[in-house]
Structures are given as structure tokens and as C-alpha cells.
Length: 464
Image 1 (cartoon, rainbow, N blue to C red):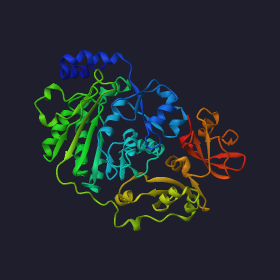
Image 2: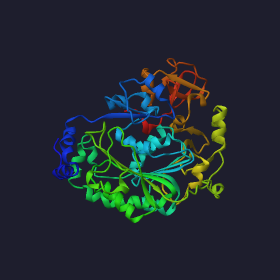
Image 3: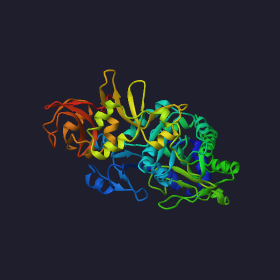
Image 4: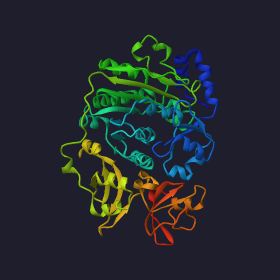
């Protein structure tokens, strides 16, 4: 692999005698891996059902090394949201940020959604997933919906704008900053070309600006994680030192150096205030390159009530057309969705909003998705459920369902949008709206007329 001269010279200076081992790692193939969705399936269940080779990642509780990503992305389990294809080192940030169920969490540079889907599995009270590019929020929304994420909003704003709306609002913040991508050269050779046009010095000011906004949104007592997929100290150690210099109420927390992770480069050995930072270097670590720093904002944690005073003026109760559909749910799910608040868009699309998410909702923010997309009510008053709702449910949440085997051709035909007969289902459904499942895991909805299953799978999600 032909690497940029500026990169190799910089790494030789940073690594010293470790340089030869580091550069030799580029002769090895990149490592492939996935992370399972623990909100839908346990690691034990997954290991019993895995259709292809897997090998446990020791430092990620729900991560596995795999041989081939293509086969996994074409399997029906992928469309059921049972896992996310993600490089092993990219799993580290969300795994390191200590998220609890009472937290308001912000993923500030979230697209395409790998880290947000991981954070969503912790079921925080609020998860805001933001990306400044609207086109990049499209896969972000889809990935969160595939995972069945609940108390989640996807926003499309600059960090500076968000910081004016949400000062000291979040308990936990993840900043996986845009970077020069040095750590991904082995995996994506296309990054080598762009590196010559835009390198570490070009990204550093942007990273520092993003971190400043994140600092402003972090509560006292809150924790923030900064990560990059680059090796450059210009984007890593120097950025951290600059932030600490400007904010003496921040401290760097220790991150474990297990499994081949290492601390700051030797040239920073005298800087005790950043010794908790870690690098994932591919000659020591089974994955691609990454950097992480974990901060705590000093001061007393003042946990806020996220149930805003003006919720009743922003949201409506459940529409009667949707209430009729929810009557088909099991008692537990019926109660859950009947208790929520709802937002109806101009196109008739209806979104379920949890109390926590409603309390942080702000009309000045541009949203790509707010809450759970339930479906659409057309001008004739007919409700059609969205595939995202199906993926939020379990099979037992919806009394009328069909379940196909994962090796059935009819599963792929359904994902391609085709009309099916119910002959090969494991069970015979009743007429009406049906929850379509693969091995008991929901995929979407269909209309059953007693013979055929009229496909209701989202056209923009069709199997490729």
C-alpha cells in the first residue's frame, strides 16, 4: 500500500522504534466485525443462530469478528435489526461512555449511526443524534429505526446552533469528530487520496470548535467522550491539551489500557493531565486506528426534569385512527403507546414522543426524525403503519403475525416488496394487518386477505 509521505514521516517521529511494526500492519487485511442489538437478541441467542462464522471480540460484550461483511448485510437478520456492521475500534467510544437509563445523551457527529445505535441499546431517557449534513441523516435515521430505537430524535444542526438551544443540558455527550481518517487507510484506500488535499492541520480547528460546543452543552458532573479515527497528535493529544487549557473545570478520566490499547505517545509522557487517553494502534490492537479521551466536567450534577412545562401546547393525544390500530397490540404495548404524546407532520405522518423527549423538543431545531415513526393518516382518514413501528415491536406485541424461516425465499421476496401467499408461513394469520417476521423477529407489515400478503414494506428500504 502506497501511503502518503507526510503520514509515514509523522508516524515515524511519533512511534520511534515501534514504527516498523506499525507500518508492517498495513500488509495485513483489515479486520471485519459486527455488533449485535442487545435490545432485540442476547449474545447467547445470537451465537446459537449466527448464520456465518463469528469470533467473540474480548473487549466488546456484544461484538464479534466476522469473515465477510457482504453475506451479513444480505441476510434477513440484518433487515430485522439484529446487528450492525461496525469496525471493532469504532465500537470502543460508545462502549466506554458510561450511559445510564436516566441520562440525556447527545451523539453530536452521529451519521451514519453506528455509535448511536450502540447508545440506544442502553435505553437512555433521551438520545439526540445529530449530524450537520442532512443527506447524512438519511442513513442515520434508517439505522436507528432498524434497531428499534425509542427515545430518540435525529437533528440536523451545527454544533454551535445546538449549544445555544441546549446549554448544560446533557448528562453524556459523544463527539466522534470529523478527522483526516489516518486510522482507516487499511480499510478504505480511498481516504488516502483525500488525505493529500485535507490533512490533520485542516481538521484540527473544526475539531476544537466542535468540542467547545459540546463543552457548553455538557452538564456539571457530566461526562463527554472525544474520539477520532486518526493517529495524528495534531488531532488527538494537542486538541485535548488545548481544551483543558481553556477549561480548568474539565478533567481527563482514565480509560483502560487492556487488549492492546496504549496511552498517549512518548512525547507526551510528562503531561499527567492526559495520561488517561488511549490510542488503538493496528500493530497492537485487533482492529483499525482510533483515539479516545474521556472527560468529566467538575461540579455538582444538577439532574433536570426533562418533562417540559409547555408539552401540552406542542403535542396532541393519540389520534383516533391510530388508536384503532393500537387496539390490535398486546395489553402491555397498547398501554405503552396509549400513554405517549404524538406529533403529526404536514404530510400526515405521526410520531410517538416519550415524555423525556417531549421535554427537550424545540421548534427552532431542524429534525430529521422525532421519536418513533408510527405511520401515516391519509386524507381519507386511513392509517397505514410504518416499517419503523414494526421494528420497534416484538412478535408477541402484535397478535396477528406470520413468521418465515430465515432460509425461506419468501423472506427475501418480502424484503424486495413482492406480494406473497401465506402457504409457507409457520402459522396461519387472521385477515387484516399482519406483522411479518423472520424466525420470530419483526421485519414489517403486510395486509392479509385470506390468501395473499399485500406487501407494506417501505419502498426506500427495499432489499438490494
